[in-house]
Image (cartoon, rainbow over all chains, first blue to last red):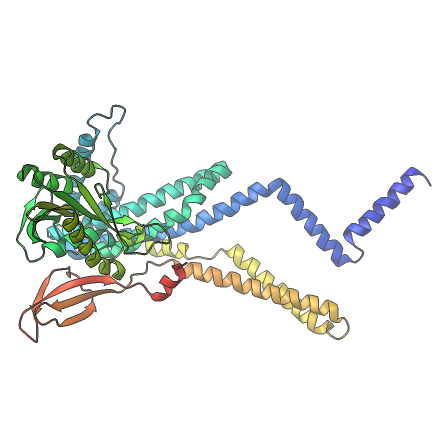
Length: 381
Length: 137
């Protein structure tokens, strides 16, 4: 037997063993090998298309939310503001507004520059809303501003995701699309929170972020209040034998005020003779923690761009005033959507904790500042 | 008009996916019919074909259900918001649906029992027990 004959016999035997004898098994084996080889050469490409498809699905959802945000904003402006002209064009322009943060090559004085930029932004937004909705009162103007900001956030999220999606499609780079696909669940969670916040802002319903403001509101209710800069109110309340200056943003319109300025003013008015400051705010909870859990610590409990935190820290450092914090835990979704019952029930627990801190950390006759931080939408005083 | 078009696009199901589903479904049905006809003469092959057919039908149904879920999920759900109105003097408490203009500490009309002013003491939304259970570890 020649070498070529034995090789042919061997290969036919291998083929018979590999592919089987009946046509059904041969077809199945062939399909298996084709898929196997395709995955070796095009595995990454297939993975890329799967990821692109996933991002595309989320992009459709984001587009729906963005359009819904715009629709709610336009409808609310028409309903409340009674504009003479169609507000849609102005709303579209508003949704594209941007803010450029100050240069930080030389960090000295950065906080004041940032504060100035944010003030300019705030004034500009308020003017725009007033022009869009001339018949709206101050409370409604604030609520409309919040509604537009939620719509703006949705518009921005949609555009960023669309950018990476199209870039990934254009370059067919797995790494471009992978980075957006990996953070997509968190981004979608945030977008869904903003989408559910739209109606809350439009109707002026209290949101989870207002937990601190609600604590302050409950403490100051029934007492005389006066305005303090900026957009805040303070009430002098007798609490556990101490004099408490309770501060919150002025409600019930959507407003966070500038608690940094308010606290500074109260400290200066009392020449620094403040026994302690207690700040109450809503804070991000970790997965597994219960919504409405109350925790206690030290430091300035305030979010945002950091200007108010900086001001508070400067003021307390000048007079060496101790600062305590009480937080109500919730996730990002709860913070911007209508107040959950669990968070509402946690308000009384937070008040008890504040009283406990006062009793433990101060003496009778002392003066304390209690600042309820957060958006006071739907919460009066 | 354009918004309707957009929301339509957002909830659409890809025609390619639909075609694949219907092809799978058709093949599964053919397999089931063959299984029925071969049941007496070749029971082993008939069994295999029946398994394939049933698996095909199950897979198609699952994909259709998933696509439907995706389509219906595209809506912003507004949960019911409740307002608690209370009379501080006699303690009368009523819970009603939120109305535009409501805010916590807002004074309302007089109490029907004691003529003192009623006040909004709470505005909140209740999360369904089912949702909570799903999240609990």
